Amino acid sequence: MRAPMTILGLESSCDDTAAAVVRVDEAGARVLSSVVADQTDLHAAFGGVVPEIAARAHAEKLDLCAEEALTRANLALSEIDAIAVTSGPGLIGGVVSGVMCAKGLALASGKPLYGVNHLAGHALTPRLTDGVAYPYLMLLVSGGHCQFLLVTGPDDFTRLGGTIDDAPGEAFDKVARLIGLPQPGGPIIEAVSNKGNPTRFAFPRALLDRPGCDLSFSGLKTAVLRARDRIVDEKDGITVQDQADLAASFQAAVVEVLAEKTRRAFALVEGGPPPTLCVAGGVASNHSVRAALETVAQEFGAAFVAPPLNLCTDNAAMIAFAAAEQMHLRQPDDLTLAARPRWPLDTSQPGMLGSGKKGAKA
Image 1 (spheres, rainbow, N blue to C red):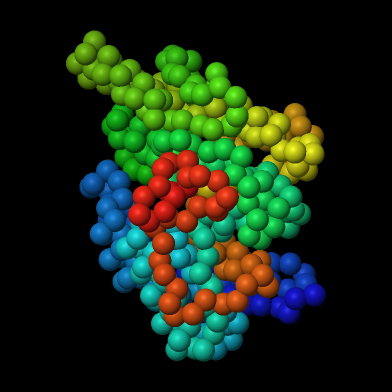
Image 2 (image 1 turned 90 degrees about the vertical axis):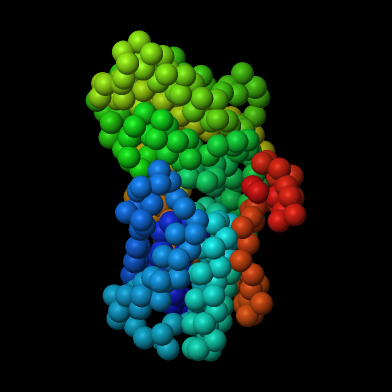
């Protein structure tokens, strides 16, 4: 039995500055506090996240979020056993801000420091929230990533497939901009879709004609653009109902592709389908996506686990918990811990999105 641990986590990989305190003991894991400062207002005028603005906001808020997380947990920094931080992948300015803040806290307090892969945080979240046993099938679906993973241990991830271009969350954001909806795109498209006709536009379901569970959403985005342009040419503009129908048809295509590719991911697992299907990442907060995946899980006789909505999007509780899961497998990091813009979970396979001097993207 491992000794109880109380961990302060920091997360700053994109546009959410987050800190959390998680305690792990023989009774399981508990989130003692979770603080998230979003940057929606800072980026609203630009139609998307501006990396330089995000990094500056992280640098300004990280220490305040950490202080607030400790206050809500009714703990002092001296009572923390370890400090965990997202050290990649992500927007490098934000990741650097988090890593430097964590180093300062670790140095000042004398506590061990653990750099955590942001994707591992998402992938291990079902163990934090539901105590899911290994192995399980994970669909990690967010703004920057989309991949099917067989999770067999705290640092043992086998990629079964993933996106070869845009991630679904990125596609949601881009489509929202195309049809004149505000950011972030995921929540607004889901809301507007409730008033739309999902069958009005026959948008493509990419790669369903090919084996395997790789995905593509770039062509779908282009199809929405062309449909919008046809409407504008015909009507000299776009109505609220047109927006709703475009959003609903787009969302229906995404949901159908994710559901079918999940079936194929189940079929790829050697030894039969795992007992649990899990989903995490920002797009996992979409109710239509959740409902479709739950149906697929039932088809394979598997349980379905989706974390609470506040733990689907970026948060620091998942980072603290991932460190707790992994710390018995490795030594703490020292002050040479580096921020990494790219950091694939399954390093045994070639990068899906290509590689460069900084390594594989995913």
